[in-house]
Image (cartoon, rainbow, N blue to C red; front, side, top):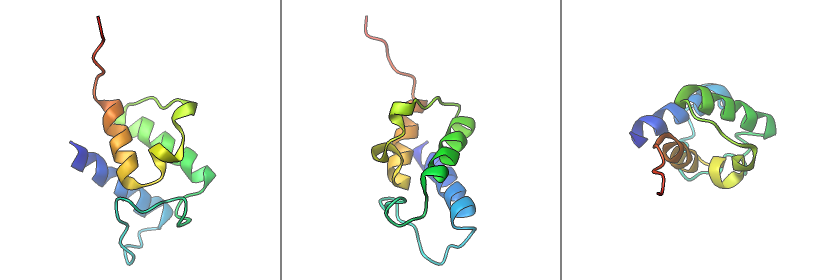
Length: 89
């Protein structure tokens, strides 16, 4: 499932922030912020895409670089939100 999530996120980023330019491969651990691929407005667009595409809710406190700075971290974050959390009795 994470490979499907990763592919959808990668496609969104390439199409919306790199305008389809695949001449510079984007590794899973490349910082999207430090390489200026995404800015603060782009982060908000990304959050909307993630919520709509993966039917998840992202809280304001979760909008941090640790969750949204690379394709790998975004994939892991979405995968953790998409998996139903077990309740502790």
